[in-house]
Image (tube, helix red, strand yellow):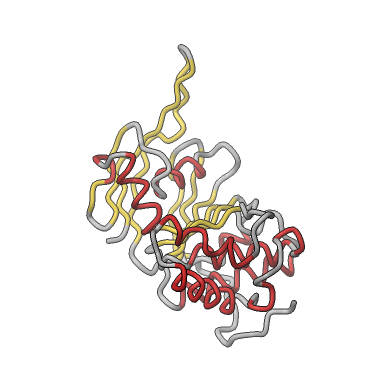
Length: 240
């Protein structure tokens, strides 16, 4: 089992007011799954993702990652888990415009202590996989939205993470660029990568094999996708 959470709760307090964001979440995710966590704004899905990706801790409940109880780890241990075990893809890309595309992709490997020559090799390899080897010396400011998200995907992959978290990865993209991004995520999953996609859009969620639906901090559905939106497994040349 890769991920197991049991009766997970998260409260935020401000003065005398306490907000119950997660109110008892229980599920498992196996290695190699492609799971969507879907819900409206304010449902608790982003809070859940922050806990699953070691950015936050629950108020109550158990979280096991690779059979290790995460709630017992120190902040430094959690930071180490983040750098080694997970990759992030964000709606807003989170790229540095003062750095080149290559340097952006190399960044997580600096924190992981990987030698420079290996950082360059891996960054070029994964940029080639997402069809952007011709953009390595560009600034992200000179890329389209779809290209920026593909840079973010390459950056998420360079440390060979156990799981990739994609937070509304198509939210800032047009339909064509969104198609390309979801196709890449499906191809990564077919290669064995575990992917957890957070979204409020049903059409986007249905690219996964399973949808966990959250409303008001509770799971209201956990089902296999019967009519999955699936791309051709053969590689298509990504249009520049």
